[in-house]
Image (cartoon, rainbow, N blue to C red; front, side, top):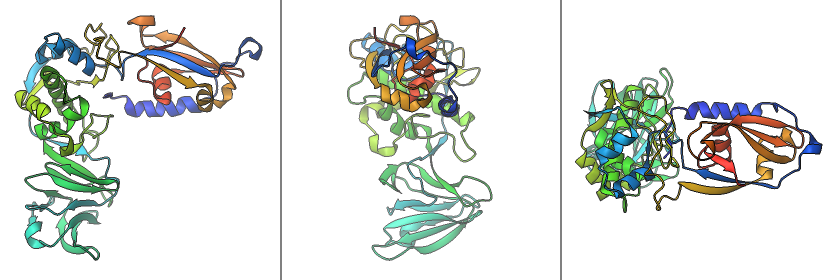
Length: 396
């Protein structure tokens, strides 16, 4: 439920913050060590765009999915999107692509379009595999109930496996079913490293996204429709700003969570059908429809005008478990992050964004100890300690 283009940059900022020497020195005589830090906070996630729990609160007040989306993405217009999307499957960490045998399974060359009907070629096969025979060729192998891998054919270029129904991908941790094609895609031209990429129609992809991002069993139908449009628009935007040459979007919370066919659910399937093809646009292109679990009562300003900072009257409904929260950090955990500070003595918020309780989200915070202090961004502090958001304060 966390969506931001700054995720990759954050990792670098975090590493830099942890490695940087303290920016100021404390007076040991003037500070007393603390054994813990108790924080109060609001929201869960970056707060840009739609609050998912806020959308549910709005739906329970009688707002339609179009009204919900108009509130969270002001200034956008309705448009249409279809076609396929290419999704990196992060759980398959090996260079080979392995799937379980099934009826109708076909191997296809991306070099010349040649197709091989695998279930007819080797009906006794239990598992199929694609590996790189060279930087420009793919080897298709099979294995039965016992014995090693046997080569069936070599195809030109990258290759993919496809069928009419879901295909079970074999990963290092188990098997996962995916619709569409599973592609053994070259990560770098001229090399044999491969990534597994799922290529499938946009609305088929959404069947594995929407139920992974909401509570499909109990949330209001209008909330599910709002999520379907936001997720479809987000994917359409990423197609125009692909993450890599061989895929457009990832399957984790760094993009939007995608779990394949396993999580498909009737209520979210209905929401996808009811909003078929609908997206939000700005300037004739899909909008960057970020969303997060809860904004705590204020949306955070994003990188586009349709992602403004504004008060949210819907996020604070009684059923939202993330609108307000409290957590405790042990001093030892803080000291391990910045050993040079010595014994932890406290934090001081230096800057906030000015929106909501306590002056809003933290922009900069000073962490002090008996030996020294250091200053980091609120987002860095939040990420390192796993806080739900960067909107927090020390509990009085």
